[in-house]
Amino acid sequence: MAEFKLQLPEEVMRDIERIYSNVDEIFGSMTTAGAKVVYKNTKMNAPASFKKSRIMGHLQVTKVYKTPSDGGINTKVGFYGYFTNHLGKRTPAPLVAKVFEYGKSNFLKQPFFRKSFNREQIYKAMIEQQKKASGGLLDE
Image (cartoon, rainbow, N blue to C red; front, side, top):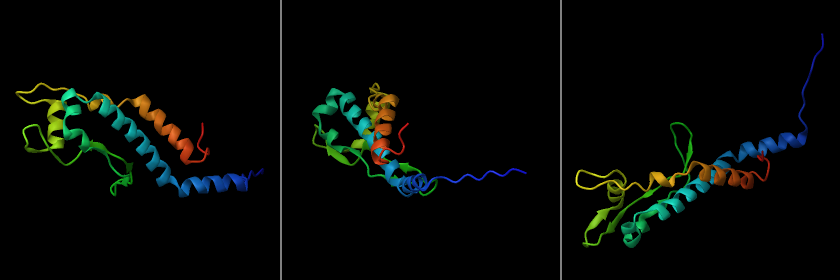
């Protein structure tokens, strides 16, 4: 009976081990690259009243974090904290952003955040970052 044994070259094994040991760093940099695209698009798509107010200072990209439940590597883009509005009142930035995005009974919605998620732009940025972070090992 014939027997086949596959033995990978040592160089290939080292490359695979290097990628495996840097997975969190590679994926983290990829999600950060995608989040930066969304951040830039959100700044562009924001309503004119947002651009004039202090709320844009509260649009942030979070640090890379790993969720304990499923081990996912994530980076968020969102409005955080409080800002002083044009009336001098301290207002939660996420609440104001949500009202603009989804509207309320006496305020028509003005979606801008959902428009900022351009799938092709995000994918392109993440693939470019993957190539850089892996040292060219994960090129197509």
